[in-house]
Picture 1 (cartoon, one colour):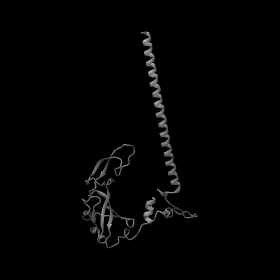
Picture 2 (cartoon, helix red, strand yellow):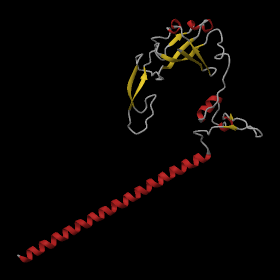
Picture 3 (cartoon, one colour):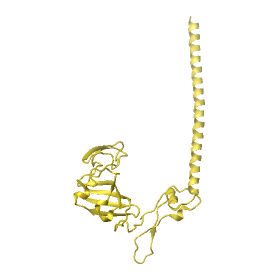
Picture 4 (cartoon, rainbow, N blue to C red):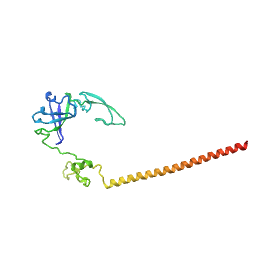
Length: 240
């Protein structure tokens, strides 16, 4: 079985292949999100605590949290469930997934370092992998750089360097900032609100005109009915 161990503090991952069942037995019958002491993996892992985050079996089916079995089952998926993307409105689909309990039939087990031990693991905790992409949303950029409302967020966007070409200047690429409140955005918001208000006033005015016309038509209809009744009454009395 392969162990894919990630360390979020440095952004690095390390893949270890282990064939010894005695070492792998510390993960057996454990569920996703459970924490396991990694002392049996070797002397350099002393003091490390790993959390199980997922895995795949030998046929490539991934584990799913909440399915309390160590076998493969077929579940009916709908919109909003993990591992399924709805193609048509109201569509449901039956798919095969692996339960959240670890056993020996897994090909890869995903682990996350929760607590670091005394020694560094080469390629995992001794090096730092820089983030390729920075935050895109205004609130997250402000949170990352501890900015206030008065600071210009556009000056703090993380630029990603593009591959250099011979004879050309080095270029960078930055994301489009989401939820950025600018004067143009405020003007557009005011215009939308004004248009909505004008539409409401127009509907109210037209409804009043229609109600007035309706009452007038009903009054005319009532008067015509009364005039017909009077004329029929007169004709009946004259014939008598």
